[in-house]
Image 1 (cartoon, rainbow, N blue to C red):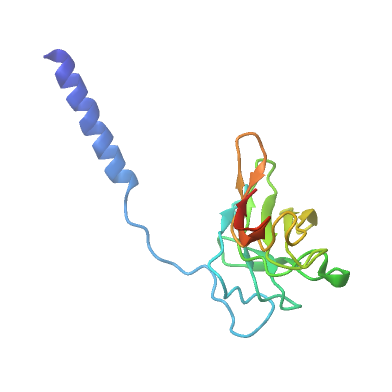
Image 2: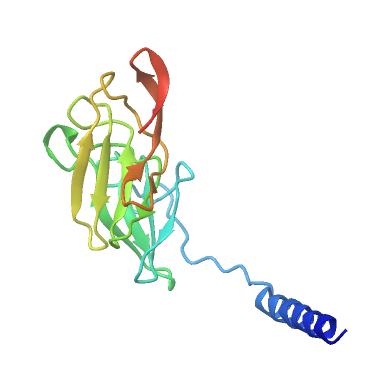
Length: 178
């Protein structure tokens, strides 16, 4: 009987503390996107947003930025937006265009994402971008020989490898898991 009372007390305490932690949050817009600015508009596909180790929120937009080919940007929790990287900044858009999947925070503190086009065969890329905006292209899709148009967010496995899916044709099939 004593054990049952202890268990019930523990459950009651857990419910109490869970209720305290689950208080309602107040909706507060951190940033309002300017219409038609092509700099920090951010209006577009509903990409994945990730919070960095610095507390800032990181995201992509697929059709804004200085070239109109997408960008990576951050928004502080105080509402300050900063463009980190504009896609199609390199000759021939080798760095990719249209990052529709957002960015995923990696174990190393950098962000990883994909572009649906641009790159060597205009078939998309996998990229890494640092919190300060340095972009490194990790993979150039070859349009058919290793798939193309990866439009979805990446996932980092426990082993550190990146995984993703695409929807375009690969070896006679539509879509691939990579």
